[in-house]
Amino acid sequence: MIELIPFSTLGQAEHGWLSARFHFSFAEYYNPERQGFGPLLVWNDDTIQPGGGFPMHPHRDMEIITYVRTGAISHEDHLGNRGRTEAGDVQVMSAGQGILHSEFNQEDEPTTLFQIWIQPHTGRVPPRWEQRRFPKSDRAGQLVPLASGREQDIEQGALTIHQDASLLGATLPAGTTVSHDLGADRRGYLVVSSGRASVNGHVLGPRDGAAITDTETLNITAAEDTELLLADLP
Image (cartoon, rainbow, N blue to C red; front, side, top):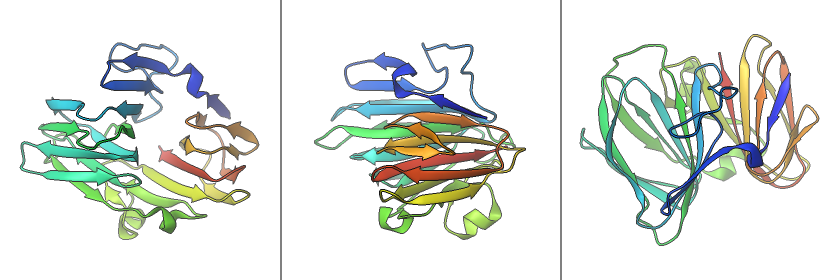
């Protein structure tokens, strides 16, 4: 089963410095029909204006993945980590026992990003933060693991999360098809970052999502040059 989640139906919040769209219930947005998807609890589509950001605040027992679409985001936390994650790259924060962090757009242009929260299978792990470059050229025509709890994905360079889940990314030239063996006993959540694509015949436009269950294999075809992310979930 594939349920399309059009961008136009997402929850939203406008705060001047932040324009947010919510795939699932989050903060002031509540939708009883969108209360996460397995361990995937949050998928926020954020636009942060120059100088804007989230000041120091706490998290606990959550795997927080940030995928920067355009611009860059600057991170700082109480563990002493500091870093700048650019478009196409990924940062992962395991909140674990507890972490204080801030995220700001220190660029001269708006930053757009996906913020993805996955519930870990193990609580109270030591908190940590890491980032990695994932050149879009390396993802041309193929799905590449960006963050994962699976050993084979980590060996390929994916950032580590504490869950039997993987976040994969691809940049597909128009007309390209990629396949992914999901397994009928697992879930998939697909989001098109830019472009237009179809999954098993269901068409997604820019920033649309698709919740996928009871589907053995995914065949994803780009109708135009497309950038997308796929969460493979238990």
